Length: 298
Image 1 (cartoon, rainbow, N blue to C red):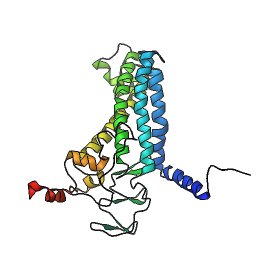
Image 2 (image 1 turned 90 degrees about the vertical axis):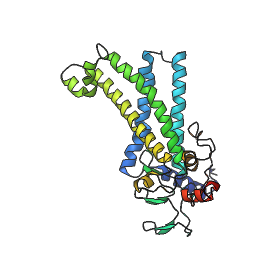
Image 3 (image 1 turned 90 degrees about the horizontal axis):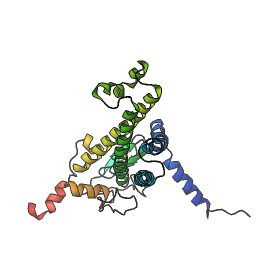
Image 4 (image 1 turned 180 degrees about the vertical axis):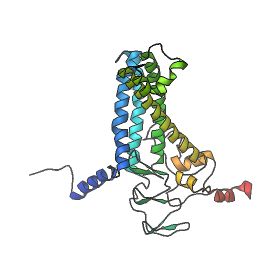
């Protein structure tokens, strides 16, 4: 007699559908996810085992303290990424309800009525509630129910990249004869020419490339963070910014609460911090409605 951890075929099919759901399908998503799941962890390991021991012996007290803090940030990044995938922009609503309410419009791609702020993703080929953008680092759209996880992952990754860049920057210049001078800046900017001119050796060239990889990562994450904060400040999603829609700007605190939940100031601490959203994704408070109900404007 065979035993199974699944009570019935429905449980197995549900697990298979969940696994299939989080597997990226498009080339851009496969590449982005591979960079996130393979490239970044390898870079992180090189940092903590190859760069940091220059100042703090591996597994010594000072090294353990610093690495432990970095691991907390890295864990937050990947746990938020995982939650972003499994929750999705529409939460538990895998299929949007086919109903008509005030403010709904017709999506010709999905052939159904969709709520306000819902837009069709050409990559996912579904309509996403309060769609912000398509994230190729997970093959999923960022929207109403999972934006807090994307935002928190970006915040933690930015904080993680700052000290790592500081370590690898100092390490790279230590490995270049004579250290940092303005006259040697071109060796960092044009390492290929410096290598061909035999000003640096191949090992130093690899150090410079790794420093450039870390700097590029921080630069890209900084762009993501600024883009998110800019839209949150204006009460917009990326889609609404591109379409110049400003109807949902309620003030910075209310914008954050409607996008990240009632505990928006804690979401970056852990993905498991409850932060209920005031909207169900079907209806949203507009600035006009808020001003109309405000006694100061009566």
